[in-house]
Each structure stands twice: as structure tokens, then as C-alpha cells.
Length: 111
Image (cartoon, rainbow, N blue to C red):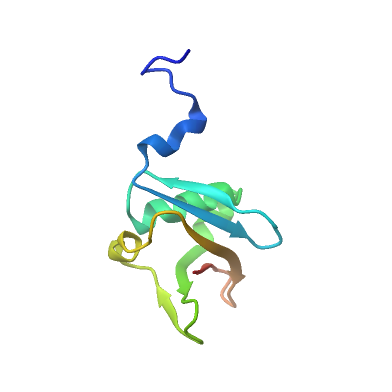
């Protein structure tokens, strides 16, 4: 039996502000992300953690953008924490890594 101070690590969802399900490129299943903070920085860190980015690659991530589903050609730069505040609970999204000509990386979210 677990006490209040010894909850299993897999129970992070109890302390999260938002739960989302992400499907990384070349994967068939979704993985849960639990955000304890509703900020773009925290979303980026959680995505990079799940994608197993090396430290060198982490510094190359320039932007996170969203391709808006059902609106052809509409992309939104996620540079404001309000964009995270408007993500619905248990939102599903695809995550793709895009390599830019200047060597930087853009993370593309589709939802």
C-alpha cells in the first residue's frame, strides 16, 4: 500500500495541469505527456524528454509550431503561453521533427 508521500512515479497525472497524448513520427501508438506547468517551455521540455533528444539537439530546437487540423496551410508559432492554455484535456497530437537549412530544429505539432 502506498502512503501519500510514496506515490508511484507512474501516477504523475494526479499532479498535472494538463494531460495530452502525442504520437511521434514513425510510431503507431500515442504516449501520454503530463504537464505540471501550462507554459510553452514546459511543453517543449516534456516533448524533448519523450523524444530522447541529446543535449546538443535540445539547444538546436528553435521553434514549436502547430499545424491546425482541418485548416489547410494554417500554422501557428507557439511562442505564447496562452497557446498552451487553450489545449484541451486529453488532446491527441502528432509530433514531427523538422530540420531547417540553418541547422536548427523545429518541432511540428499537428492537432
